[in-house]
Length: 416
Image (tube, rainbow, N blue to C red; front, side):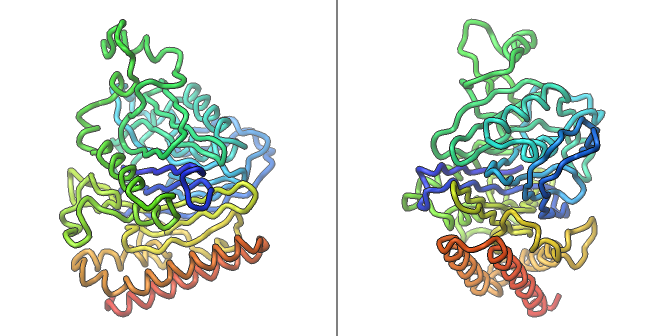
């Protein structure tokens, strides 16, 4: 389960594109922040999560948030200001379940590495989908969990939603605030795969003569309903529209930190799949938010990628990163088991807070908010002053260090 919110430059306070995503996965599925430099490749193939495909001559630099065990990424930004997030969607198209295709996360990373614009990224994913398909398990422990994917793809000039079902797809242009969640949402696409209507007719999902709806024809309504994707998409879009216009960066943080209940009534044990900041509670709500990102894409200045590097946005601090590897050289990526990485240190504290949510959150909230405000103020000042790449990297390193120190101190206070 995941949620994406797209704010076009015309709708944001800064006049820049804002792109927000929560990545919801299994509770112990740590997520790594990784910088991939621009590269020229002599090798002719690249090994993705399950399959090997042809490599291109040049790939572009990108910053991604990646489930630690996967090759692909849940979300990310490249050096050309292309930003992409993906969603699991549940369709009527069946899987062979033989892991002979690309995961949605593979396609996302490949598109970031190979595209200079949102339009090119859209074409890249469509080409990969049609050639290799997506018969690939997208889960960590549950090896029987297969799903198809949708994508929100944007740059500073244009944006697209791409929704898929097997090798079929539908795409639409996005010109205003747009939410995307775990459900097909395109009814009258701007463009459509060649065989999408014919396949729907053959399977009796669509009757010729009626208005064709990709979402209506291809959705698996049972799994889509259980996932409450439409409700969460409506929630994020509604929260964006309720904010004091135009929308600010901090509004995006708050939307990703919101739950299915008002703050005073929320308890993690009462969370369900309608919660934007997701907390796992059991069989019918097995996922939680394991990483969160808000990207601000600028036209003539550096892009800022705000990443938590931790689970549970409601308890996290967004750290500013830029398209450079310097801060991440000393940033230990998480592994399969608890370790001394930021993700696992934070996860231990968050688990303790969940048992006494209101009082536990009070232990960290004042300092957490103060850190967030400090980071926002310092990042804004550096961008306005046109500071160097080194100064931006130093800011990331400083913020990362402060968050590490804060979590270490909070753990001591909690006695864990």
